[in-house]
Image (cartoon, rainbow, N blue to C red; front, side, top):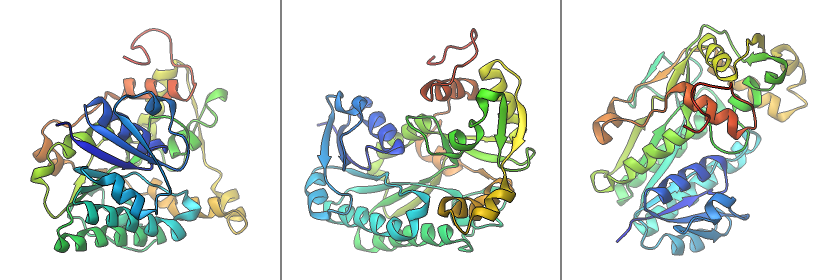
Length: 323
């Protein structure tokens, strides 16, 4: 019998990519969303829509019956984290508890606080010295505590996303905003290493880990290394991908600081500025020990695909956009 997975937030950027990866791997996918699913999911014969609110635990528990995995791909906008992140995570945990499914969730590096070390492992000390760090730490603490009730869970931690449909990440909302003017906007010093996750690779990791569901008991944290790049390296890679030189430009942090009291999103960005000032990379040794070789699209190919999805022309010749 094919395995079944319930994806919460399947209409979102991360949820779409993960849902499609499971469906293409032969899983039966139940895709929760409050709105119509994207066309790529609607057209897939292995995808069944579940139209309800993400906090409708009774409906989701029914949808999760027979599923071996529940993926929490819900991610409220930055300005709504305080209000929505924990209730959404609690709902996902309740569904996993009621159904007996493995709960999987994408994680990020917020847990390690403003002074995070350069190499992050699953055992690195977590420091709740920012609001979002405290939220993420509490979300994962509740998942770990539920292990005593028989709830199995895994957090797959990754860097900043790029690739996949739509917009809304640092990659497309900052780095690429002036690309048409041949400018590369970078939020921090260009010699500081930064962790990136190409979403299609991360989605494949979710599938590979889910295939080992029987080995996953209790609560685990796994790290996805992805691509670790300085701003200089990212700029050079984008120049290669676009076939044009790019002039470096910084984020207008002074203006953002002045406007932050009046603009909630800019206030949130200012709090997270440290992510671009602290070098960091993720150690994926535990992930490799579990699944073997980790999916890793070469950076030139990943960037060409990402630019194509965003409608940005890639350089002619060389590697095709969808190789």
